[in-house]
Image (cartoon, rainbow, N blue to C red):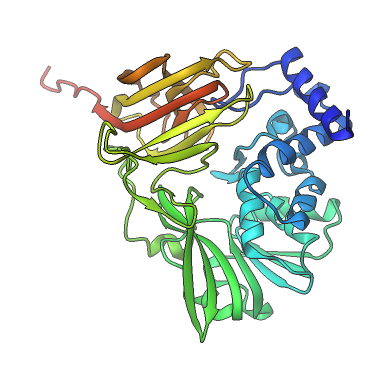
Length: 424
């Protein structure tokens, strides 16, 4: 057995021996924090890179090495160390998150970082993305608008001796003109449109990667600067926290938390070089099928997984106000074959909804299980909305189970709370 196989075997043994309830459906579970020694964390990080980052198609060996070398757990609170090497975003305070490892690796690879590059990052957050870039480029200049996060990230980066990462507190909408121009720019928060200041501060021929769009309907774009103008290529749908400051003031479209709904629930509209369904993101092990026999329209999606516990999903987020929206109904057409549950009880094919409070902490989760069926069947469930809910995410897929499951016509309907009779 090779060393890598041995590490993976140990990891799987830990999962079976020390399961804890995973915070999201289809996310592998790991032992509680006290059991995660330095060796255990290193093994978890390498497993994540092997089974999530590389499996997601990241091929640049320099990026893969950077992901192996960067201790993600150091950029979150110690209470979150058990989740540090899940392929999931985590809250870092101030309504901000640390991005999922695969999206960090993907954005880094698309940026094409070179050893001589001077890179501007908009949105320091925890400092993790800057740390990953640190070993790949000459210098990283990172801006954070939230003072407490920026100061904490600087302390972490200094403690871990990322000496070529330079940080400041400020509005990323304005860039860092004193240090411009930059060979590359990476934006880790979502503006509705790319700020002109960033265009001006990017070198001719430079690359910029930005999640652009509305709050819950974003596309990750790769821009290159040619003759002073940006040429864009849509990469894939995504979801980032919004760019605040001046960018928020210029936003034309705001989410409606009183009337939440799903986008492209029948998967008819595709976008990006990956040709993924508009509105759905963090996709794992899914293919789009074009078939006139689809229950709704011309397309549906199919998830296939042969390894218990492995991520196999698609997500979509939306705003929801639990003070006003009393219940929601989620539904979809589904077909499932050769299904076997994963190593945790809730690792089954499902349509689920996870609720988050104003600090982006999970407050509840409910799901509709998809049972085996050779034919398309409608699945639906009606669930209460926690009063503290301000956002939610719909998950579809195998979510840790094995087999094959297909979805079409996935919908969400909000039910407002009954009005009080003020005449009494």
